[in-house]
Image 1: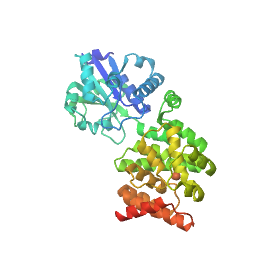
Image 2: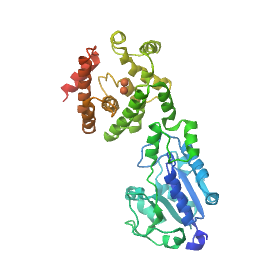
Image 3: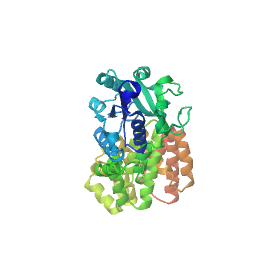
Image 4: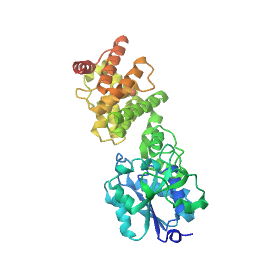
Amino acid sequence: MSSYMVTGKKEVLICGGSFDPPHFGHLKLLRSALRFLKPWKTHILVSHQTPLKNPSDTSPQDRLKMTQLAVKQTLPSPLQRNLIWDLFEIKNKRKTYTCQTIRHIRRLYPHASLYLLMGSDCLSDFKKWKRWREILKECTLLVGCRPGFASPKSKVLSPKSYKSLIRPRTSDLGPRTLFLPGVFPDISSTQTREIIQNGKIPHAIPKSVWRWIQKRNLYGLHIHLWLRKKLKRDRYLHTLAVARLASQLAERHHQDSRAAHLAGLLHDAGRSFSLRQMADYSRRHTLEVPHQKEVLRRQPILLHAYVSAEIAKKHFSITNSEILNAIKHHTLGSSSMSSLEKVLYVADIASEDRGFPEAKKIRKVAFRDLDQALLEAVQTKIRYVLSAGQWLHPQTILLWNQYKNHR
Ligand SMILES: [Fe+2]
Ligand SMILES: [Fe+2]
């Protein structure tokens, strides 16, 4: 049965997203929509940048390739027949709103019925979308229910009950909303990225997508491989815990959580060196370490932060100076610390793997008041250094005085 026969109009399905990376949630939704709607054409659009989301670190070309691989591997061939890989948003090379995409599709098919595919998680903030009334006027929302989000007040439909699908279902967006039968898996690209960034293999993506991620070293995979190879297991796990907390704190304090995560991952890269290697590396790369001579003589381990920043720059081509400074200053701090520097300094002391009692308290304070957490972190460090009878770096004393004076 063609869609033309059902409605008297040709039906065009629009499936867009950042697909960063594409996962089984996306694929199941698309497969279900294709089976139930049997559209005449389906346009798949990978975004250049999605409004209401942080810019992706993964290029649109990589996200497009992963989506093509995922569709090719998982969709039955008959369902792939009328798919069109639409580059409208990628060619736009900037943030594209859905209303602009809908206008583009409308220009291509002036007389077709348009269906916009989405998960019910998007439905809850649909009214925040630009020109959402215009979108509703032009097309019907075809919605897949995700656990915990809006769902139709109806029984689950079987594939045979397609006709009842096109009957309007209850939704506060009115009759232009149709719900697909069934519930779609609770998978998100954010979770999938986090799994990769925690050094594990994600099971929610097709094998072909995982192979592409490995081939192209996406989502910091090469950094994880390097860290796992070079660091002791405890140090690697500490690194993951710091990256996780830094990213959460950055999000809480309206900073770039991806930058914080990356800084957390690389903050102890220099610990892969012995003390002698750190000293040699610092000399060879003429690293500027405050009170360098004394550091070399009394506490060479302090070099590791500066070495880590250099490894981030030279080995992993990190050019973002905020990230590099956060890594460089995660042990001694600096006279004018940026929010990202504070986040990493605190995350390093208060990460979940830290066994000392102050860590938990500082972690809690950090979500409320970053400067107070920083002060408590410096105090904890000073107490530890003094009780161990070690040399206290002058920068730490300066940091304590500076923040104590401002509280
Ligand atoms: Fe460190
Ligand atoms: Fe650390």
